[in-house]
Length: 105
Length: 105
Image (cartoon, rainbow over all chains, first blue to last red; front, side):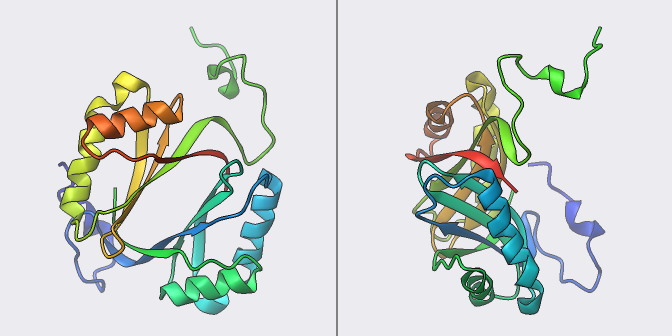
């Protein structure tokens, strides 16, 4: 409710978006089958993404692991879903489940 | 009054975790069917969670929307999956897809 003028600190060259809407492309992707993966293995997979993400203009901000369900969720910014997919594929953990986020809280 | 180090605010029953592992229960949940939802509607749904979450010891930190795929992802902390589910159900947007996160980057 109180999200009035929060966006005004962003660059003036960027078109103003309504409160809560994103000014650049942001993505959540989901991986299945990561059963029993450790925190160290998650870090290693994330590092593999970070190492090459710049070549695609992507940045992986966060990743979360549920090793019991075998799920990994990754939050990223980048030019397109396809660019996100390419980084993950080249890093050895491809997924087709990439969602473009138009709003966040 | 408080003379402890930073980590001592957590329960003493919680053992120290290796780097990257979480010391309290954290969850990612997923909602389907949110097609065409706006940023304002996401905010309203999130506010409905925030209003009652304290009664279950849950806190919803973030939420992300893909209105084209109809997906919402919510990141929360709390005592259990069931507590997270109860808040969402009482707020009017139930989901059974709640994942307990054991590590994050």
